[in-house]
Image (cartoon, rainbow, N blue to C red; front, side, top):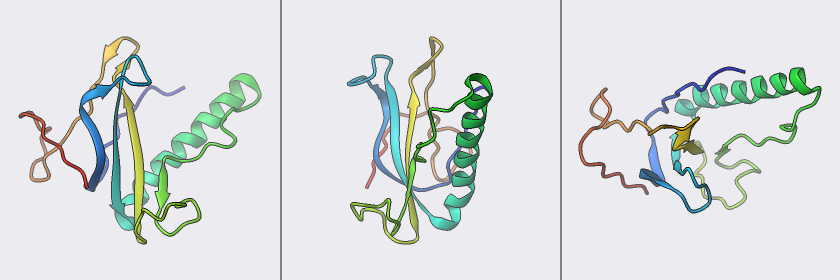
Length: 132
């Protein structure tokens, strides 16, 4: 199985970001999370990357065990106006990505990189992230 690969999302609108400290309510090690709204054109590449990762995981499990637990895996995104958008919260022409990251992987702390929209360097100041 491939190692974890860091993926950077395109610029979007944050929705309920949890990026300053990990959320430990349900997971002892903690989770960082942020829902992100992207325009459909910007989202296509990320959707393709996610779909490929799911496909690779299914293939790996089938090869290792002869079956896969991910037969009914739902991708972590909702396309506006689709039947998956049961609450009609995603505007048409946009995609909502539900992104999570463990705060620890194999005992090593992991923190999401947050970028200022005006810079190509990770934001290192006092983190103030607001979502709509």
